[in-house]
Amino acid sequence: MATNTEHTGNHVPGAEKMYHEDASTNSTDGGIHRQMTHEEHQTALAASRFGYGPLAHVTSSARLPAFGGEFQPGLYKGVENRKFANPAPLGLSAFALTTFVLSLINMRTRSVAEPNLVVGLAFGYGGLVQLLAGMWEMAVGNTFGATALSSYGGFWLSFAVILTPGGFQIEEAYVSQQSELAFFDAFGFFLMGWFIFTTILLFATLRSTVAFFFLFFTLDLAFLLLGIGYLHRNAAGMPNPPVIKAGGFFGLLAAFAAWYNALAGIADNSNSFFIIPVAHFPWSVKGKERRQKDEKGTA
Image (cartoon, rainbow, N blue to C red; front, top):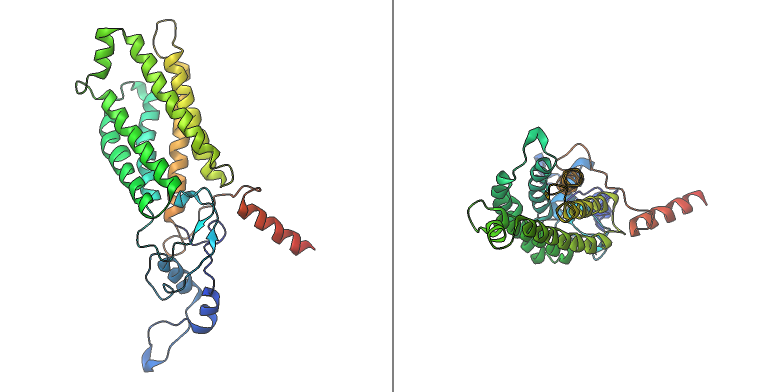
C-alpha cells in the first residue's frame, strides 16, 4: 500500500499544511516541540492509512486512482480510516506461488509432469488463504478484489478437489464410466470457463495500470491455452504438449505479475528505499491528470 503519490495518488488533503504549520512530534528536552522531518512525515502518512500515527485524524474525501497493490482497477475511496490492513498483497502472493509451481510443472521443468505437489498448495495457500483474503476485501468494501480473490481461491480449491490422488476419484469416475478422453474434455471445459471469467475481469482493468492489466492479460492467455491444450489433443489423445507448455509460460508471467503487484502494495516510503512503478495508462484518470499538468506546464 504505497504512499508514493506517483502511482497511488495517496495525497491527504491538509497533510502538507499540517506538515508546515501544525505537525509536531513528541516533546523534546525542555518541552519544545519540533517540526517533523520529511522522512518522518512520509512515515506518518503511511501510518495514518491504518488509523494510527500523528496524521491519523486527517481525513480525505478524495478518490485514489487505480492501483494493483490495493486490487482496485478504478477510482476508490481513501483508506485513512480503514480498520483493516490491505488484504490484496496476501491474496496476490497466495495466487502467485501456487500458479508459479503449477506453471513450472505444465512446462515440464526438469521433466516434472505430475501436479500432485500443487494439490497441497492449492488447498492451503492458493485456495484457503486466497479465499480469506477475498472475504477481507469484502470487509473493506472492495467489490473487484472480493470477486477476483475469492473466485480464484475457489478455483484452486476446486482444482485440488479434482486432482487429489485417490481422494475424490473424479478422474477415475470418468475413466471407468466413459474414457480418459471424456475427463480431458471436461477439464478443458473447466479451464475455458475460467478463461471467460478472467476475460470479464480483464475488461475492468483496461483503465487501470499496466502492471494490473498485465496480470489479468497473461492469466487470461494461460487459461485459454491450457483449455485448448486439453480440448485439442495430440495424435496419441493426450493433452497437446506444446500448447500446455505455452499455457505454462503465460502462467509464469501471471505469477510474477501477481508478485509484482503484491510488492507494490507492500512497499512504501516507511519500509522501502524504492517505490514500485505501476505505470498508469494514458487514458486512465491518473494518466489524464498527468497530461493536463504537462499541458499547463508547457503553456
